[in-house]
Amino acid sequence: MAARPTWQGHLKLSLVTCPVAMYTATTKTNDISFHLINPETNNRIRMVPTDPDTGPVERRDLVKGYEVSKDEYVLFDDADFDKVKLESTRTISIDKFVDEHEIDRLYWDDPFYIVPEKGVGAEAFAVIREAMKSAGKIALGCLVLRGRERQLALEVRDKGLIAYTLRAHDEVRAADDYFDDIPAVKADKDMVEIAARIIGQKEGDFDPADFTDRYDDALREMIKAKQKGGKNVVEAPEPDDTNVIDLMAALRASLQGSASGGAAKKPAPKKTPAKSSPPAKTSEPKKPAAKKAPAKKTAAGKKAA
Image (cartoon, rainbow, N blue to C red; front, side, top):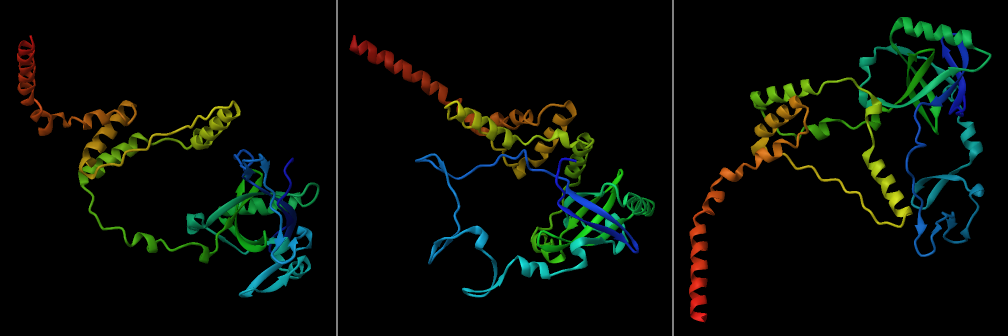
């Protein structure tokens, strides 16, 4: 296994304990990252820790401080943090089991793989895993991770376990603070029916490989262009806002486009049949006036002759 474990310790279910390692289940190695550059020298900017009174200082000589009042800090070094010892620093102790639906999706956070340490604890790990599988529930435990204690939700996945960190209650904002101001609008039944049919036409299986980060692709194309000395800028057209007046027409056009497999852009020309609107017809009476103008020109031409 090439990756380095994020955490190593023990998994505990009552009196059954086994050594485990935890690995991050996600990666950001493919993300585009930028550095701060001085455009005049083309040099990368270095962030140097600086004391406003004494100037630059070595990072290894620094400690952390908690501000208790303006410019007054309680200082902590590594030894102080080591003194804060909880069981969850080195052990994931399973406290209870719950049904998955009991955990609101708002609380699910980062996923991690949990595997038994090689050579030892494989049998105890298998016992815990199979017991969890037979229960068909989510196990809850705690772990000190990245400087704070986090609640974990563990589930069986193949031969191992997946642990999701759960957001704390005070980290999740109440939906009522945002949804209460949404006006109570009674949706038109016909519109809802058409929208439901559109949803039915767009049903399919989820495949994460179907998603492509087009913004990332555009940035990479721009990087290539700049490497070649170009200044190409990749632009994407902004979507048109749906006009409330044309909502029914937009729904019907979307339904027709989805059924035919065509893009939803087809209905756009049909919207512009504003040709039948009065302004378009009022321009026709002006044509005779336009014909008189040439007649005057010919008269003027005769005078000139």
